[in-house]
Image (cartoon, rainbow, N blue to C red; front, side, top):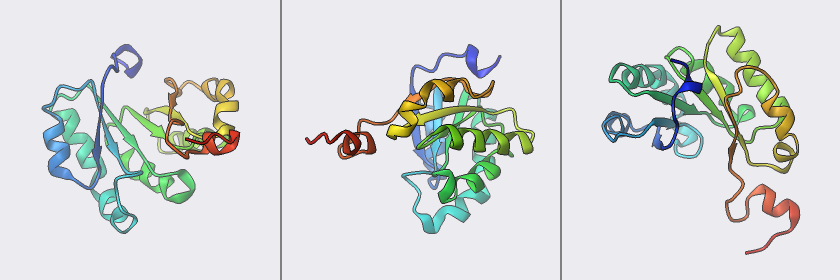
Length: 165
């Protein structure tokens, strides 16, 4: 069964630097576990997490977790290395932060080079990503949907249009 055939009603985010939390998350009944490397992992711990991420993904899948996603850091801030490390595990998809058409194409090229079958779930968090959303979802067969991420107070879209809380 492919990722597109499974419901993704609930996403359980778990910091990638907390192996005990990842282990516990598997028993919580969420449709998907998102191992987060972006916001929850301090930069100083990035290399350590990269050494263990594929094993964490593998353990989740072996324990019967239907969907395992990884949210790497922004691609120009270490995310390409995050993807390369995690792609060694049976990742269902990567949630790509701050997605633009160029960013999604870059992630797709890397996954192709790594011979990974993982999908891409772009997170639209910038005005450029929102404007390019149609081109992003048409960027290739790896794109399994889009995820909106522009609701944060003082987020990029709010600053772009001049919205104030």
